[in-house]
Image (cartoon, rainbow, N blue to C red; front, side):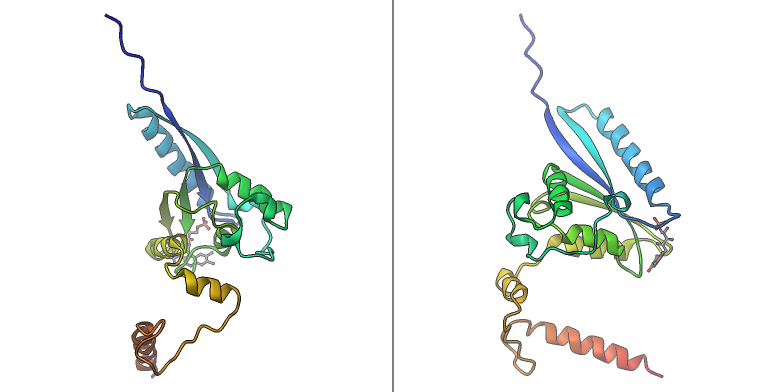
Amino acid sequence: MTASPPAPSKSFRIGIICGSQRKPRVGDQITDFVHEIIKLHSSSINNTATFDFDYIDIETLSLPFYDEPGIPSKITSPEEYAHEHTRTWSRRVAALDAFVFVTPQYNWGIPAGLKNAIDFLYNEWKGKPAMIISYGGHGGDKAASSLKLCLGGTECREVLYKAARGEQLKLEAAKNDGIWSSERKRITGAWDEMVALQK
Ligand SMILES: Cc1cc2nc3c(=O)[nH]c(=O)nc-3n(C[C@H](O)[C@H](O)[C@H](O)COP(=O)(O)O)c2cc1C
């Protein structure tokens, strides 16, 4: 009797992203810690998958502030980007299957450099799984929620494209139907809350 051959192993490339750029910072220590835990854990699980990690430090990416003339969601190949730094970044992210974001919480959100690096691309992130590890002086829940929102994109594609072209959105503040009519309550609610805080 012959033993059946081992199942072919699947190989995944995972981006581990350190979102902090401060000098000094703890972000690199926390990202290393997360990276090590994941490596130990993934090698101890008896499955057929193998994982390669690409450690992406936003600090050493040295991207400028967003300077592409186009809208990333319209771009389908790296060659369409205007700048070499974007093409390099695009190829790197496109080669990955999933992402581990490690981010500090800055002013209830994520650091500008991390958001900027995300903004440069769109299709390279799209549809790929991601996990978020956040930390901060008061915990990192708001940074995590904000990153989750940002990675989730928007559901209303038509409005997104109109907005990208700077077209008329036909927003009507006094009407109960139409786009974002449901947002009126949230705007008035926030206004009431702000007014109530005035001494
Ligand atoms: C600009 C800035 C804003 C911050 N805002 C918050 C905040 O809103 N909430 C919070 O919990 N911590 C805040 N912190 C504290 C950081 O989350 C905390 O020091 C964290 O460990 C910094 O990580 P890093 O060293 O990797 O940058 C802020 C720190 C900085 C530098």
